[in-house]
Length: 337
Figure 1 (cartoon, rainbow, N blue to C red):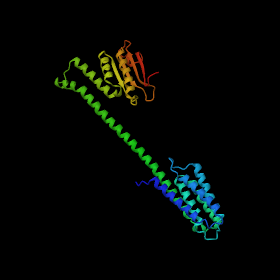
Figure 2 (cartoon, rainbow, N blue to C red):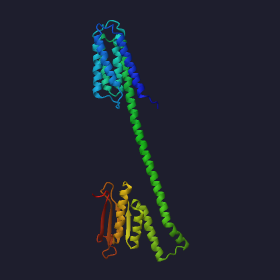
Figure 3 (cartoon, one colour):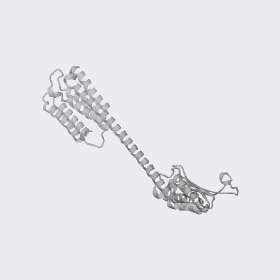
Figure 4 (cartoon, rainbow, N blue to C red):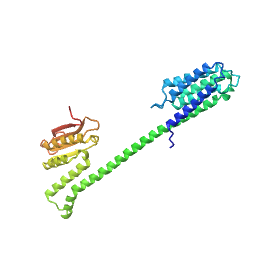
């Protein structure tokens, strides 16, 4: 990609404008009276300086575009009142190229409608003042061509800028997707390592004993199975403190189920630690027969819901509506003030 300095473009615009002003000054002897031409030169100088003045905005303000348009319409009328349309006026028709340059600047600064109105008014005034052939001999067609080129370049650059923004957004989305995939891969490896650390000792013991286990060892296997299930389904609900309290609860005969459905993934570390500390405390104090901890939906004011159920004498009560609610806790995402 070739980068063109903004200052270089400003310098070129200023150089062309200064050249037109010089032509107007050296041809002051041609008009019947020089005062109207001097007034037109003053207007053109002010319009050019304002239009080329470096600002943070690329698009020209509407008020400045309107002022440039008024200058572009007024200059030909003011200057030609002192010229003979049938004579060879030479450089005295400097205003034609001056209007073309000014309207090219207007078009380059994304005021395309104003630019075309300006050169259109120049063409109409020339047609009425000197006739159709003057459109070519005075350079009106050339001024319109320069505006057309500026129009095409402005549209092309705007399209390229939009495409660059789209590509940039796509690149950011691809990077975010890749980061998410890397995070999932890392988490999977971490969970696998955690599972291996938990299960390997018992698996080696089972292999050494040929699969013959005592009742105590069978209970340990069930505890390990539940711990592995926690690592898979509990995910963000697990901290070292929560793991300890869950194991203690299971040691007391409580069935504990942890379900992380992604509702606390966006919490920052301090907020997550606060929520999970409340969860660990609730599990440690509960005397229920079954505890279920589940993350709430994303966007909910509640982070985690904890339910403790107690049997009502029937062995199947926990699977029916007859179970007694011993614990109901909704842990908020934010600290209640």
